[in-house]
Image (cartoon, rainbow, N blue to C red; front, top):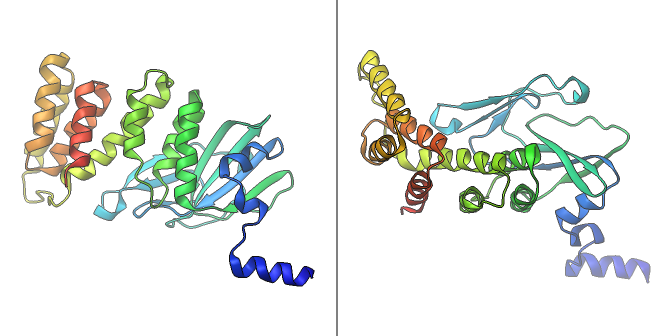
Length: 264
């Protein structure tokens, strides 16, 4: 009879208790200590499994985040590769008190660690965005970042909501604005080729002019930067304008990002 039940469960796809639980529940119910999760990275995301993560690499212009040497948690080995994303959560009393994301590498088994294994990237992305809304401080900021690395996740609609929600911690909102601006850069420059034959000095002068606009009073600088972000023919200049708009924390910048991201 026991064998029959096992076979029946396999045939009809009955979920195991672990599979039936949400990722949030599994993390909240884990013992105090480190909880590990892995999921597929979105295209164009690479890392060395330790302190370097690069994104936007499809265009050949990788953007990079580097962290310090986390010597108290060095238990991975890898060359730079495209995944998976690995997130280490530090859980106390059912709550995440800190987390850190890596791309690539291989966890080395260690006692006292709860390893939840590989989870679907969309589920991980949803959980991380939910955590970002609920948590404050560094946890919210890191959760936003980790969510943007997940494959098959369109994060920017929720990031826009986070950025506009005054009940969310300031650090999390700033992180959300930054990552929305990154997505908007890609949308604004899609299909545009860099003007590689353009005079380098001339481009540097124009990029400096974009920076100068970002330092002007908002009523003068923000509309000018929005115009550049929408219409300039050089994708690098557009990227610069969008970057500085992302630093402005102006509602008009968020409206522009949303417009860029919802264009067909």
